[in-house]
Amino acid sequence: MQNLRIATWNIKNSYFKMSKNVEKAKAVVGLLDTYQLDFLALQEVNPMLAREIQKRLSELDDYQITTTYRDTKNPISNLRIEYNMIISRLTPETTSVVQSLPFLPKGFHLLKDAISIRKRNVTSQTFDDSIIVDNTHLAPAEKETELNKRQLNQVASIVESQKALGNDVILAGNLNSKPTEQNMIDFTKKMADIGMQIVENPHNTYKGHTDHQPVDYLAVPSNWKVEKVETIDCDSQYSSHNPVIADVTRKR
Image (cartoon, rainbow, N blue to C red; front, side, top):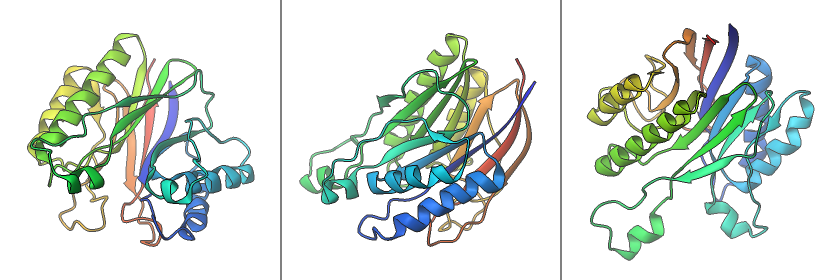
C-alpha cells in the first residue's frame, strides 16, 4: 500500500497581466506546502509563470518541476505559449513526453479560427515504481463538442497504451466536459473498461458555473482506493478554476 495526495489546477494564463505571475507562483507553492502534495498538475502555465514557480520552489525542500518548458525570451510569444506542468516530490525516471491531440474543429477554414485556435496535448511523466502522471487541457465540450470528444478518445487511448506496459496511471487536468454531458459519460465508461476510475467530485471547479459540476478531474486505477476528494476555493485573482485534491491509496 502507498498513500498519495494528488491535485490538479488550471492556473489560467494571465496573458497581459504579467504581474500576476508572481502572486500565482506564491499560491502554487502555498498549495504544495499547505496540503503536502505528492503530485500537482498545472495547466495554462506560461513561461514567465514557470520561471517564477521554479524560483519559489527553492522555499520547499523536496519539490521539483518534472516537466520540461521553454522560455522563448520573447515576451509577446511567452504570452501565448502554455504548458502542462507537473510538480512532484517523487523521483522522475525519464524526461517528460508530450503527445499532440486533435485540435482543429470540423469545418475549420477561417483565418480568425486559426488565430484563436489552441493546440492541445497530453504531457506524460514517468516516475520510479512504474507510476505515470498524464496532464492535459482539452477543448470545451460546451462550444466544441465534437473536438472535445475526439480529444477524450485520444486521451483514453494514451492511458490504455501506458497501462498495457504495466504502469499505474494518474490522469489529471481540465477535461472541459461536465459529468452529465455525453462526452464525459462515454469517456468515464471507456476509462472503466481499461481499469481506470474517474475520482467523483460533487463540486463545480470553474467559478463561472453554478450547477455544482466539475470540469477539472483526477483519474486513478480502478483498484486504488479514493479516501477523500476536495475542491479548494481559491481567490479569483489566481484563477477562475479551483484546485482539486484527492487522497488515494495505491494498491500494488
